[in-house]
Amino acid sequence: MIDLHMHTTASDGRSSPEALVAEVQAAGCRTIAVTDHDTIAGVSAVRDAAAARGLGFVPGIEMTAVTESADVHILGYFIDVTDPALADFLRAQRERRRTRVAAMGERLRVAGAPVNLDHVLDVTVESGRSVGRPAVALALVTAGHAADISDAFARYLVEGRPGYLPRSGPDPAEVIGRLHAAGGVSSIAHPGKMHRDHLIAPMIAAGLDAIEVYHSDHSVADVVRYQAMADEHGLMVTGGSDYHGPGSGRTGGLGVVGLPPAAFDRLAAYAARRH
Ligand code: AMP
Ligand code: ZN
Ligand code: FE
Ligand code: FE
Image: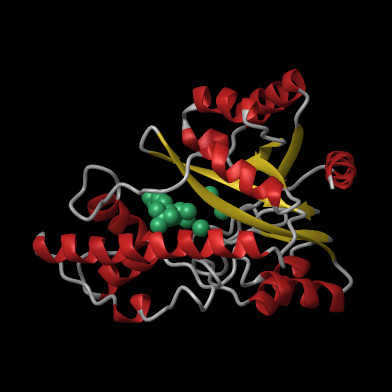
């Protein structure tokens, strides 16, 4: 299995880099990419653990862009993790995340559902760890305002609910440019979850390299539709489970959803050509 989408404790995953590699190997993965939200803090530890266990490894990230007040997740692969401009950009992304989480805490207080976010906001931008709504959801559960994470999202944290705040940040074209500047290739993450296919054409015009065709939340119809779109525009294809670790509720695709080997070989050759 080739799995190019998974998260560690550097963002909202439940597994440390070392634990993650053990889990995904046990599930049958032979080549992996780690793709934490707006951070590469887990990359070197995953790379080392993968090497020690004889797994293939690709450095990756899942960057957050905003357009038409919708979040667009953009995966980056084969990035140069030592690139200083990339580091600066990601630091700014994490700062925006922190600011948003703090403001959501304030909104929840005003709404009569106060939560303790001290542990979340103690995470500094420099630590490389990124925070987000899943941490706020956990605080809502801890405070007794919600039964579980998905209940916390549904009642407080999705658009239209009292804790929600729209995100500010770069548009997809900027994120694609940042990934290219760091030597990477870009892939729109799980477009089937976005329900906004009209956003893809402008991204292709901005240099989008690939579409994440295979994903745990994609139906067979999604796979067929996005593969056809990739073929039509001469784009590469990516795929992975989006595994978030034990207890995350996002474990189902591990060892089941991944990228076919031929598509991975094309992606790797494309990335090498672009370099
Ligand atoms: P943020 O980037 O801070 O807006 O948080 C978004 C993240 O929260 C996503 O990447 C998902 O991992 C998670 N998420 C979004 N919606 C839900 C939901 N309804 N239930 C559980 N997790 C969610
Ligand atoms: Zn996540
Ligand atoms: Fe995502
Ligand atoms: Fe993800």
